[in-house]
Length: 161
Image 1: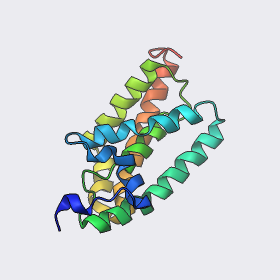
Image 2: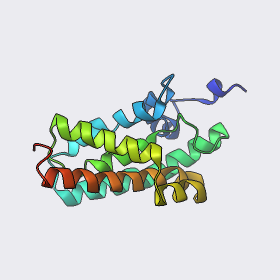
Image 3: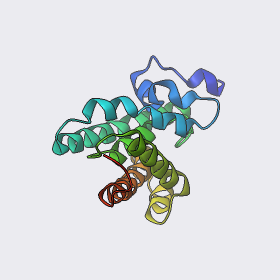
Image 4: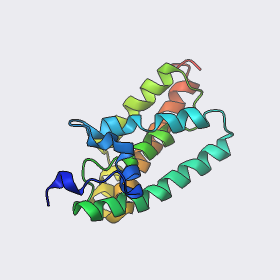
């Protein structure tokens, strides 16, 4: 069976695992998948911090299942089309940030940097943890690193709120 025939957005785990289909972009699927977090960011921006944190945990735990099951369907661990991990990572980046276009852009750039460069412990998680948890873990950590950097830039006054 060809790779394209294994994609089935009618299966709920694939619909989410593939970031509502954004992971099927012909190039840079991780970048396109990151954009799929925007509706969640906009919907929850005025929620209390504790509720944003709960939502981040929910989409991350859900992602472990959806990404793992999608990887099993495709027969490839962390196939490039699996982008729910990017959705969770960018969402985590934006927790507690008063949204401005500057914060969204800087958060996006920070998250993509940490996700692609995979410094230190992010690289370690990427190499040592497998299955759905392995797909999600490095992006969750990249999201936390990005969150810390973004909040530092906001607190320092470099990003308007």
